[in-house]
Image (cartoon, rainbow, N blue to C red; front, side, top):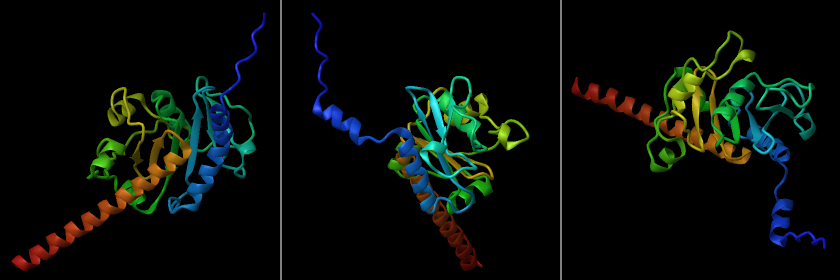
Length: 227
């Protein structure tokens, strides 16, 4: 006698209905980050991976932002779901991070005011509070030599660079790094959480610059008083 299929619990059904598909959430997040002061220099963008299918979804660099215009790339072989649209120049960097660190599910590349100042200076961002320490694991490093190849479109994250910068075999579920002269990369468990990480890092950078300026003023005035 065939058994009737088990009815899904109302709570499970409602949870599935209430959670938009990943691509819809990615489009919403890309619109959100463009509306925030995180796009001061350059155009920020967010990618996300579906770990069930191992497809990484990107905002096309040359198409309008919509679900149908997102480009999917299979993580295991680098093949695209379709040929229409141009991938962002840092797509291989995102793919390398997703491949190396399975706890990362969404990545943003952005160019906010204070972040860009640290990036241009090639300076690490100091982390001072326990919450910042928990989120980023320590100072946010400004990295040299992340890319291989002469063209940005051929860039990829070197395994040895990832190991030395992000830790050998581990990385915080949320976090980020600076790319010298190229803004910041941050990651988290979902596209909207990644935006929050980006905003948090920009706030940390703003406070760090304020402290550095104040320390500089104190040193200057202190020297004047001594003279």
